Image 1: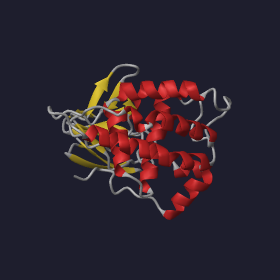
Image 2: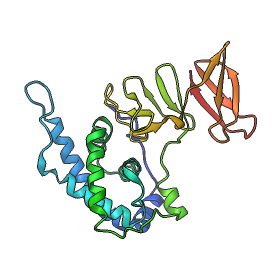
Image 3: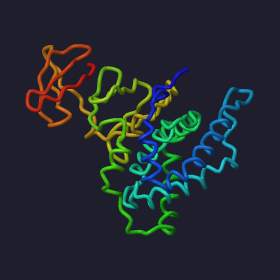
Image 4: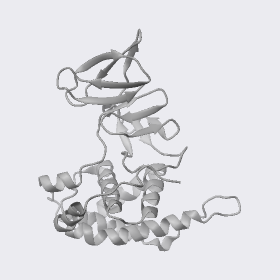
Length: 259
């Protein structure tokens, strides 16, 4: 079974830049990946009812997460004002990037299991860790504005999504989440929570959650669809097809989406 992000790879240039620009994160990632991989092996072990036997307490995941968060703040990947959801998204991008350098797939799978399927538990843990980290770092630390770091850690997704008949999809990237793998939520803010509960095909290229403002529901009538351009927000009226290729008349941005 191949996971959607399994062939995701970065260049040697990116790997070199990662180590140079993020030295503390680079030092913390191997232990974090080791703990994630051990945790994944523990949920692979099933009991007589074919259910996971639970996570061994000796995986070291909590302590390795703490060290990584400290490193992320010190390397300015994260500001202390990021909040829980911002921290989780930064972790997602880091884990996917580290995997793309040729590291363990199982670590990514446990990250998916923990942060997507068990979102409330994992966010509670991250929230507690962030509070602890505040005593170990400079509280005035802000996220870096260095364009090299921004380019290196650019997420492999956009924040312009749409709803289709049985899916939600990314307008600018070939990413979609099928019905059963996401849930509509109202709190703490209206939007969509990605769970991968139905397929368990964790795709770390997809954000853990999307707000209503990031997901457009096309207006459909009389065989036409009205959609917004992901670049300039221009309203575009197009013929309704199952698969639509659209080009904005204002800024010329092209994208595809499914009905």
